Length: 299
Image 1 (tube, helix red, strand yellow):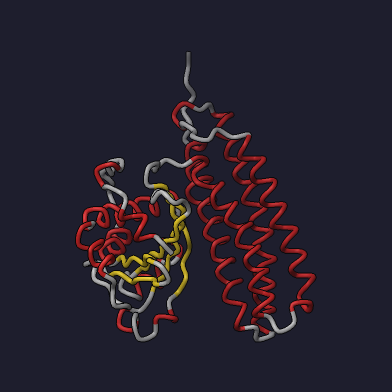
Image 2: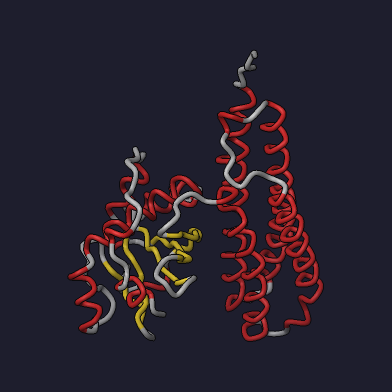
């Protein structure tokens, strides 16, 4: 965990300027109450909205980072919210729990490159009064992938999520070996889910290769809009089949009282549900609206 060390190398003046954006009440409130979780060596530091460390005694390097990089941290938090608003439905899908927790959201960073540029961010919500006393009771609400130098995402970011799903399944297998009483008892479920993961991964990437990476919707013909909409819907169908199989497996694990493992399956299902909802609402929803309101251009 070297997120603090990598971010310490970043100069906010070298990052693309943030574009003005109108936030709804949910995104505004989360921005005000956003806590960061950044690693340094073996320690994960929970950092308050005012940039004080809540859970550990910080090292001199961490204190120095927080004192000198406040502008970067301000930028980082707003960048996170803008990405959530554009490229996910994470906050919308968990808005009930977030509101119940007074809009407290934790953003846990994991570096995806060693240049302080690309990160995987996992999001949780927690009851404010018990944040430190019962930290383990936090609720997982999703994950995102950000690139500090490139806000605009190819294929609306779908490829990153598809790749992540395959990686997560591989990690699930490793956790099953250590946490399930008798992994062989669930062999058929693992096999079925593996086949669905591979199918969703392979077919989705093939579909994306046939689509424009950065579609300019205003310049597309009605036929092109319909075709792109249909292709993204096809990806959704593969993910729905996978999510349903994971849901059945999760229910069985709960019935069998496999508490040490089922929570990882629940997180996996949450990511699938978020991605399906993003496709339905912010891709197919927008494309469908464009199609329904298409105005034929006359030469």
